[in-house]
Length: 101
Image (tube, rainbow, N blue to C red; front, side, top):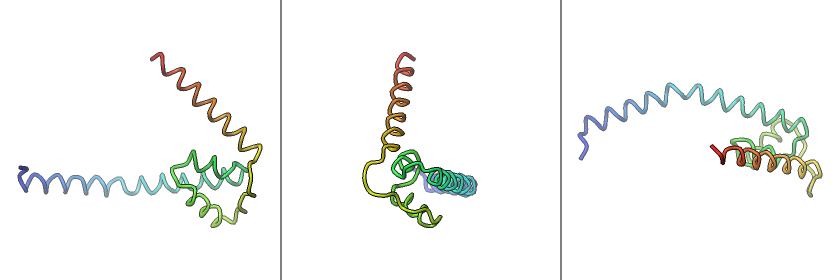
């Protein structure tokens, strides 16, 4: 069994680390939100944005609404297919390059 004073010391240390990194995490989140909005404004399909962002598709849609970006029309978009194909191609290339290492 762990000594209670050791457990409390570990808890205090973890809480201190959490508080010290909270500002950096919030700044990174704001940067990610700005990048998501910029991608949506550049006509990157929301599904592609959601796949590449740290956010859920629902949160990406909320960000788009809050930024007055109109929703995508339903249906498959040719641009979305090409972006997804490029993404898959890049993933395959990376996988092939890292296999030999």
